[in-house]
Length: 134
Ligand code: THU
Image 1 (cartoon, rainbow, N blue to C red):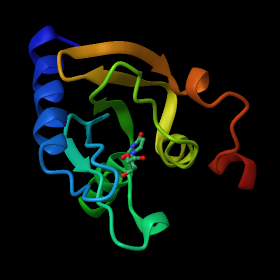
Image 2 (cartoon, protein in one colour):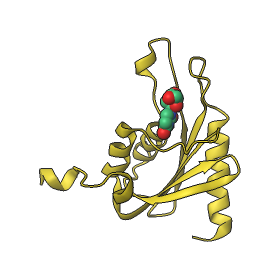
Image 3 (cartoon, protein in one colour):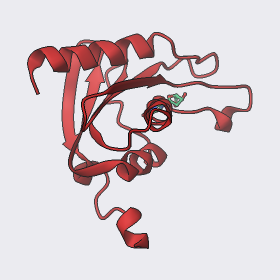
Image 4 (tube, rainbow, N blue to C red):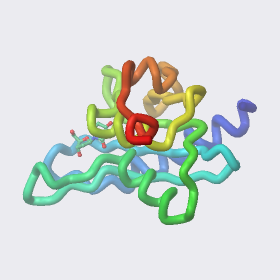
């Protein structure tokens, strides 16, 4: 992955983060996906008054990808603010896993760029996936 391409995806995650609808948590998150075939998709978290029904940024980006007929995540960038690493929640780890291959990478970002990069197996070891149902 070239630096220019990586910066493009970081910028896409940041732009998505700026659109987050978070009147309850005030915690904005953005996600950007690069597919195996080179397309890019993004998403932000969207909350609502029934707190548990809000959706994560990763879920939004995955929905946009699938809506466009794509199902193979090569890389996903997840961006949040603050000191802590904004790693995908448990549910999103499984959502990402569904569309991952063994070399799929998850880049945990702050507004300044990548803070940590993990493989899907590091993020969700011993995972249950589509193969288990084959
Ligand atoms: N959130 C995400 O969108 N992605 C993550 O990886 C972690 C958490 C959102 C959900 C909720 O809108 C807010 O962050 C606070 O939990």
